[in-house]
Image (cartoon, rainbow, N blue to C red; front, side, top):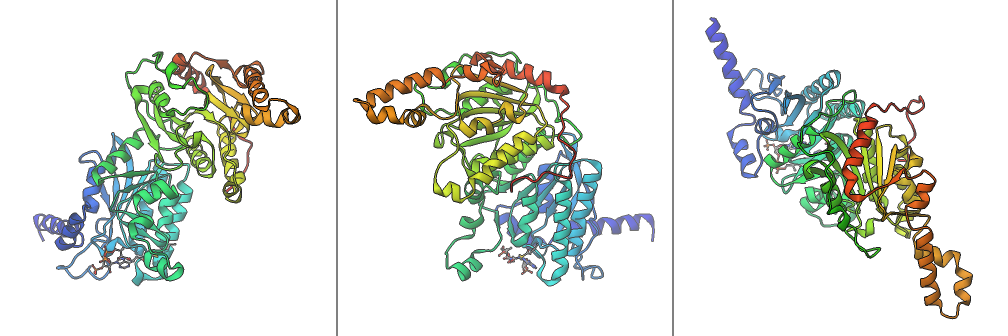
Length: 514
Ligand code: HXC
């Protein structure tokens, strides 16, 4: 065989392999508003940078049938996003429904091992029917091998899952072990057991979308961090997320020149917090005005909205932002918002991202549903995450910081580096009304005009305790600042903290209240 013939044979094989499960299945994929595995990779990566691995791993049974040569149901390799390396696997639904076989598992594991050794993120594009039923326990074993890689890579390299089709059964656990899950609206579903099994076991009627669609997980369960309409837009959002992250836990996040003035004062910051105590406002307005060019990537935007978390830049450097949201449930801290913020703080800490916290919360949410649901354990996650984190931590009390929430939201006592307050700050054990009802119970019981006495006592309490100056006089708040100077103060603090070198005592690992 001549060289020309050899190269021709190679090219024919490649062309056959690239057809995936054949034109009919590719057309069906497109009709459903979905791209193919390769099209997705090309939409995700910098143009022309994809280098494929194991393209020649063929579906068993097709090796010797040259009319039917078909690759296994995943495309794997590496490429670049904004010039930086990333590893990718993309399940091919057109081949046996993207179901996971042993060779497919081996392809994925090879990519994950390379990513871990070379210190670069892994992005998994999921679109498949779960364990390949014909393979039985071998397919289950492959899942287990992938889960182990997810766990070993956790906190070492960023792991991102994009769910772009069905992901059912135990297959959901690989995405769940990664740092962020993106889902495409209307075309992706995740669930442990599907609608038919649910109907048989509990009698509930539920559609695939209601049960495991993007919005179900983005707004109700919190499993999904980003629900995005359209595959191309979804993959662009993955690129945006990566632009904030380091390649691995030994690196700092990339510096991006944003052109925003570090010392920029903002008059509007004086007007955001309403005059009347207790009136809501949108904490995101403060965040947008403080960070570089208003660029804030909100994580979990639809879930536990009483807490805001997300990524932004301050003078070109990535920060993780946590903030109470007075617009929802008055920014109260509950089970879901504790879990949301705690996990985010731990992510930031693992990847050298400083944490910036904006506080305005009346405290933890009272009620039997919260207590029986374990708010004690879940709230403890928040405390644990802040206290454990060794990255630079800067906290600004905007308005209320009452009770346990004062401690939990990045207080000095949980090893924050710089704690500032606006003059509108209120830091005390509890809000004026409940405090007066408790400490003046007997006075109120005997007062001739209860309401008048109560109003007077509340005013006295506010003057005495509901301000930032008591905490500042004890050094728990380092300074009370002019709100208009917030951005400059934070940037200077982060600059000062760039050389921070803090540790936790040597241990195998702590015992996070799970
Ligand atoms: C083998 C599978 C498959 C699977 C789909 N296919 N899932 N083959 N093993 N798990 C095949 C189908 O036979 C079909 O082949 C092709 O893929 C496309 O599937 P369709 O059913 O035609 O597509 P659609 O109607 O879009 O439905 C997609 C689906 C459905 C919702 C994913 O196929 C489905 O429910 N599959 C089973 C899902 C499941 O229960 N998986 C096991 C989960 S348990 P042809 O040749 O006809 O085109 C699990 C355990 C993991 O994963 C444990 C880890 C700890």
